[in-house]
Image 1 (cartoon, rainbow, N blue to C red):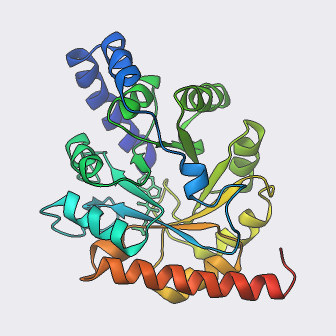
Image 2 (image 1 turned 120 degrees about the horizontal axis):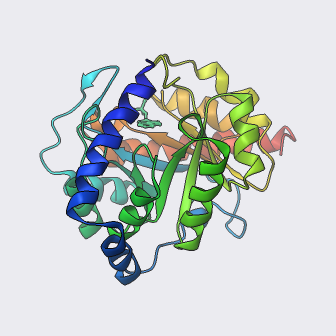
Image 3 (image 1 turned 180 degrees about the vertical axis):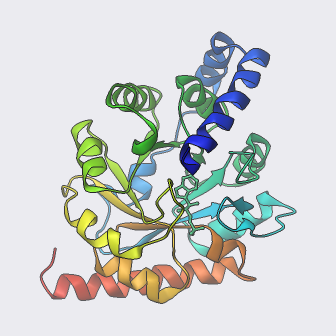
Length: 277
Ligand SMILES: O=P(O)(O)OC[C@@H](O)[C@@H](O)c1c[nH]c2ccccc12
């Protein structure tokens, strides 16, 4: 069994317990009563926004399957507030519990204090999780192409849009990018970490980013250690970078985000000067 299969089995089990506690019908009512979703597509530099900016998606991440505990985050809300202060465009909160140490309680705590769009970062395998994300005030959900068949991908994306949210549609191969594009994904992530083996290979980003049509936003996910990595992703066509570990381990995440955004802006300006856009 791959790591991804193993994670998904745990997610499905935990999800059943939550569905027992709050049935779908009730979760739908909660979702319909929630404040409307914020426009994450615009926040990430969508069509009408000025070009030339690199956006940062800053992640609240306690642990990872590859590295174990990353940081002792006593107060996810204050960490998220510092992300917002540093200029993050979107905040991602891991809610998967078994491998990433996240929870919907973390998500709720963050939702209470920040005004920018929030990504509920989990392994979506059932429509219940999409209603649940909206009920908790999420603006974006994660859809991992490798974890879904085409029908699920299409249905989950449609439901996400119906609820006024956006989806970060995550890919790792050329074929997955094609599947994401085929269902009309507007925000496409290239995760340089292979979720089946957990290996990070930054070189997968550039060719995949190149193959994403210009109407969709391109998000570079994983493996950002420092400004040099941000510079490379921006030079290779990223509209935004998704950063977890480097921020939770840093003692001044706000300054780090500001630094990454500035580095990205310069790299994009250089790219445009060379006529690559
Ligand atoms: O901590 P990093 O290397 O900066 O990575 C962040 C993010 O890309 C990573 O957490 C991630 C990308 N896709 C995922 C899917 C599920 C869980 C986690 C992830």
